Length: 325
Image (cartoon, rainbow, N blue to C red):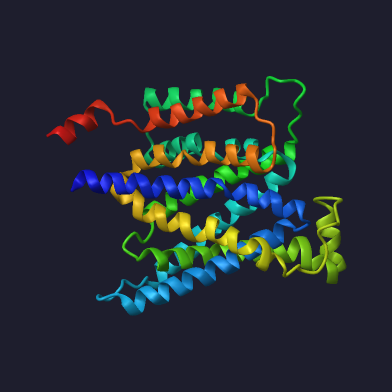
């Protein structure tokens, strides 16, 4: 029975990671059709929240037992933690404006070693040798996967910056998701966190697109960050009918549900290894649908990053001895 649960967990996490890996390609396609980052993120979060509210309602009326309710303190903590969820999507989608999807996903995966640093700070313990080696391999793989050694390739520093910001935000999301209000049903917890993320997304929508149309002071402030005024226009509601549903489904509804079901069965270590499928899936989608060039050396880098993730999550001798006992 235990083996069946593990296989179920691996399957759910694998499917969730694969679906999430497709997201950036659809975002890039939305950009090609003239939609802005604000419109993409807003449609994703609005439809995502709507979908989760419907699922939560169905779960509430069909459940045979009373579902746990969050305390006011847990609601505040989850809303605050959810801002990192909004930040991850926002930063990642901004990065995709400046660099290829294949490079953006590699930068997002820097959360692998970011999490090692955060864990060391929280526990006040230095990482073990295997984790240090894994981090070095990730960094080497990143150099190859982003094709930095090819002098003909020029990475836009804006894209690199926002990609790393997305990785930092994603790291925070993973830590808070696994520690806060774990007793709550998946849908209720996701709704609250998504509401927190929506605050960030709506604030960006106002600052970067809607607000500068009506307030000169805000427009002057906006121009301090960029000279690009193409994004300052009325909201294009057709995004909800074109890409919004796919973005919400692939970004804020299906993956979180599958992860929340899969990780408890697969375990955090094995689940982390399987979730790294997001990397090759994202690169392959960008290659097939967007026609992005992916060189052999970049695939070598991706394989190195995947190897480092596996190495980092393999059980230690002590953990094996404990499980045997």
